[in-house]
Length: 151
Image (cartoon, rainbow, N blue to C red):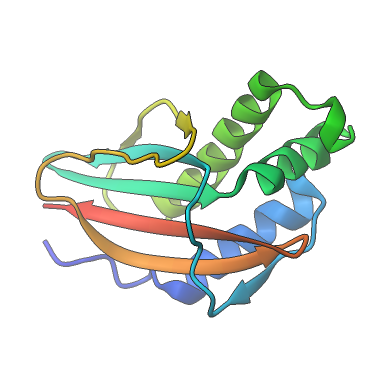
């Protein structure tokens, strides 16, 4: 099966802009700068038997706390690590739901996974390759939204 034609960089931009304006309450804009050394990644798998898509949100530590603070109506200093992880899990769930809605076939979402720390990496199902990646600036900090695909 070919890659979905409706999932492209403008679609990822629109998903991020919608989530940031309605749920996170922070400014966001597309950026040409790539995220360097992310501290935290959140991901969800979308399964369309036998295909798999993986949606990944990557950012630095400070922006992760600011995202959670925006969602919870707190200051970044009031946000615990658990609050941060829960908020990023919800954000990736929202973003993956948007991607899922662009896939015409019936599909299911996995539960969100959030990984934080220095030098983090994630292992995806065998054969997953980067399909799209969009970079953003929010609150003067970088983040990226990536979509991987495995047929």
